[in-house]
Image 1 (cartoon, rainbow, N blue to C red):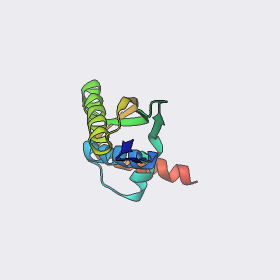
Image 2 (spheres, rainbow, N blue to C red; image 1 turned 60 degrees about the vertical axis):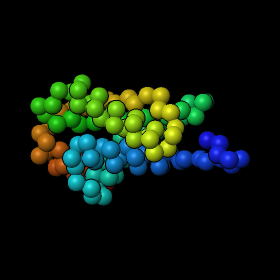
Image 3 (cartoon, helix red, strand yellow; image 1 turned 30 degrees about the vertical axis):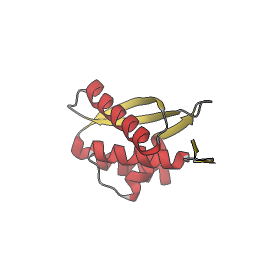
Image 4 (cartoon, rainbow, N blue to C red; image 1 turned 120 degrees about the vertical axis):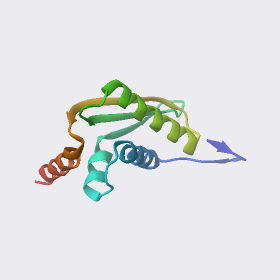
Length: 120
């Protein structure tokens, strides 16, 4: 991104952090190191040749009882809007793979269990 004769580069880590915070807020999760590690692990940032952004979220667990398409569309819109507002980069796509539905109260427990298994 050109700016007054200079160049601004925004790293993929910055984009991942924006997506992570959007996931935390949207899914109403507690911010702790284990949840952070799990969520950042499922987020993939790609760039197109035009430097547009493509966000992929793999293995997302959605709270049981939510209308999955509406829930995920809301998340996708939030991520797209926040990245574009904060970075002025164009988001070409936000792709989400829903892996499972779980009780909202159980969502955090599942995240912790998966991280414990990953560490073994």
